Image 1 (cartoon, one colour):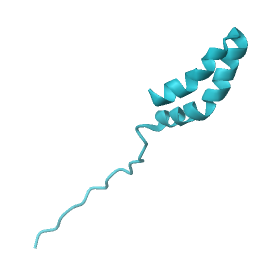
Image 2 (cartoon, rainbow, N blue to C red):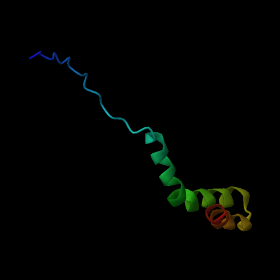
Image 3 (cartoon, rainbow, N blue to C red):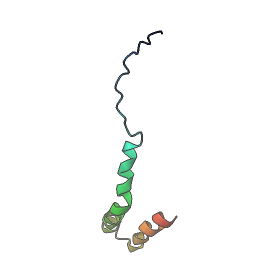
Image 4 (tube, helix red, strand yellow):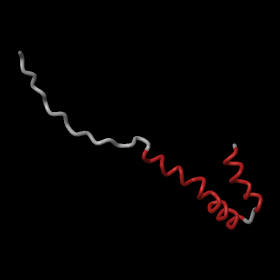
Length: 57
């Protein structure tokens, strides 16, 4: 019987390739605050529709 020599496999650490995209999940909850700042800076109340238009388009 022949002996099989096993070479050690390097320990690989898994990394999420989309880890930077997790920050995109903060976009929708922060949208009202962003819109509030834009409306306060410009004075255009019509910009309050920016959030629903962005979400539903």
